[in-house]
Amino acid sequence: MTRSAPLRLGVLLSGTGRTLDHLLAESRAGRLPVEIVGVIASRADVRGFARAREERLPAAILRSRDFDSPASYGAAIAAQLREWRVELAAMAGFLKLWTIPADFAGRVMNVHPALLPAFGGKGMHGERVHAAVIASGVKLSGCTVHFADDAYDSGPIILQRSVPVRFEETPQSLAERVFAVERTAYPEAIALFAAGRLEIVGRRVRILP
Image (cartoon, rainbow, N blue to C red; front, side, top):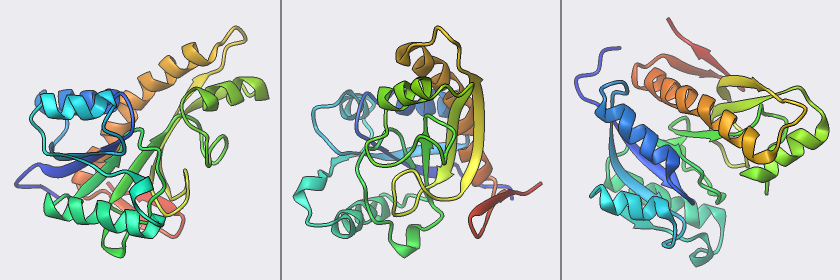
């Protein structure tokens, strides 16, 4: 599928916004056919929200504690995404659980810093993931890009990239090497979506030619 305009991308974040920075850079370099049309932050006091404001991107703060359930939280998030006419929402370190309304099913992506389904679930984010990986003794870790659903780190897997886990590894060193592969895998998955090359079949994702 050839698009006549860039994919309208919304970004959801809860932290530093490093992934937002990278997606902006990839878009501006012409390597990623997207326009970031809005940013939702789960907190006001995070660098990612400040970066969105610096870049003069439309930005909103939606705190889960202000809603009585993941469903009502999801409804508010989706309403904001619709206002911006978002075609794909990219969760970029967004740590809050939200129920994805039907019209956004298959239109929300997440990247997780491990090889799902291992080392995922509630509370498994940031250095906690890498510490658990090292403690387990596994020899490979990496990242997983997947379509999000209504559970933590669930949904059909799109791409995975691996890195070796070294014996002398620390959570910090592993985090940096995993983030390096996230920087290529996440834009690749978004570009595949923009090109209409992703098909969800049950719990699996087919990458079309």
